[in-house]
Length: 330
Image 1: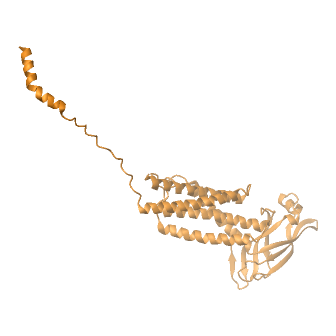
Image 2 (image 1 turned 90 degrees about the horizontal axis):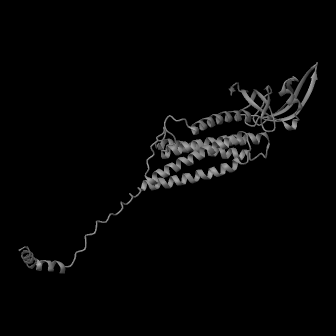
Image 3 (image 1 turned 180 degrees about the vertical axis):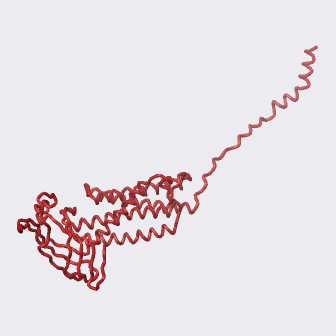
């Protein structure tokens, strides 16, 4: 019975099975293709900023190369310390510019925010103007320094230039921060660059004032002699004073005579008042002034034993009484 029913079912379904076997097979539907999302194009503003940052970084790196070459000329001393201070500021500026470039190019967000890291165009413009003025002063100082081939005056002028260039690096770094909103350090974290810049500024102010006081009169050591009078020993000097940068005729000038070694290091100082009138550009000679010698004082021994050719003298002006009755104190 079951065999008959199976045969009947095959007879009835036969045409449908044959049609299915002869029908063309449909290819499976392909999975929908996935296309990677395109990176958002950079804005015109970002592109311009990136170009400006690259130009700034190239300029900073050129100055680093020059400063490194200059640093190799010295083995120690104040000038080398000033150059290394400038190098530290320039390298930090390079790193800050690089950080900003990476952030703009990759879209990364700088999480750390530092005080003074906002974009401040007015401050940037003011600092740029200050830097331009300082560059002109450095060029003028360089022209003056190049008039000398060596000696104390040359060393003093080179030291002043090194201080000014370190200050310039500090000003330019602050200008970059204000111009591009660089973020060097988290708020509240002590800044090596800030400390270096502050120290450099203080040194520049002190050096500038000291140099100005010493440039009013230039000196020439004509003679040095050791004398014994009435059982007392003395060291006397003959010195020519020239009023290179005196503003107007002076009745008297009070200050300190500095006895220095060939490297400009002060070894001894003597209070010295010029009581002779002197006009701008004029020279006067004072002879037979000095100090009472003490054989147990090291500095006195140095002054006595050192040859005059191995000494240099400068004069630090403290007060000027002008012939018109006015007075200027430093």
